[in-house]
Length: 165
Image (cartoon, rainbow, N blue to C red; front, side, top):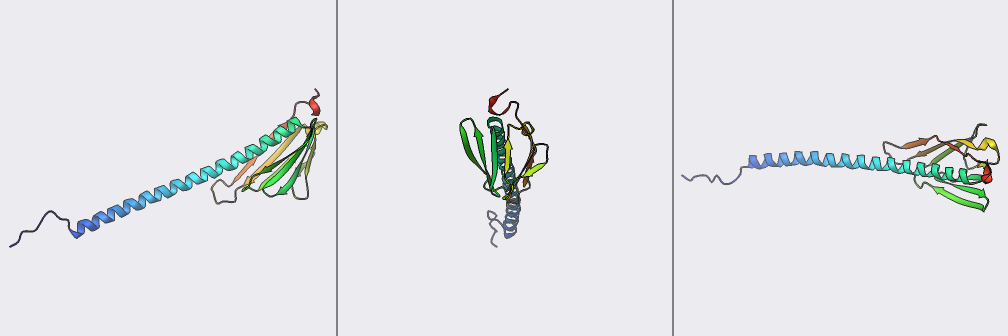
């Protein structure tokens, strides 16, 4: 009789090895996909917060350095600020590209909402406009977990317009 060669592997051993490799691969791919989705959600959240902070920073600078300014609606993703100071008028466009903007300003006499039909004009020679309650909402168009950021800062000015004390 012929002796069996014990150096090879059986079909059962091969199938068991392939099953184990397939299971481990499926688990690893699932972990990688979940990690990438979490990374993209965090990145979207950081981007939308960064845009919101930039808009508030721009509004604060204009509020502190101008004698008056007007915020005009351009489209759902952008608006312009025309500021008037001692050097003349300067227009800045704020564009969030992907995030629709909702902006409300309240100087104590009631909120004003920025819309296509309604601009927001702030005259800083009026004492009532030195302190503004602002509500800024940016909404993400993507299906991320953090799809909206709302900021409610108070923008104030300590001096009168034109640098007078």
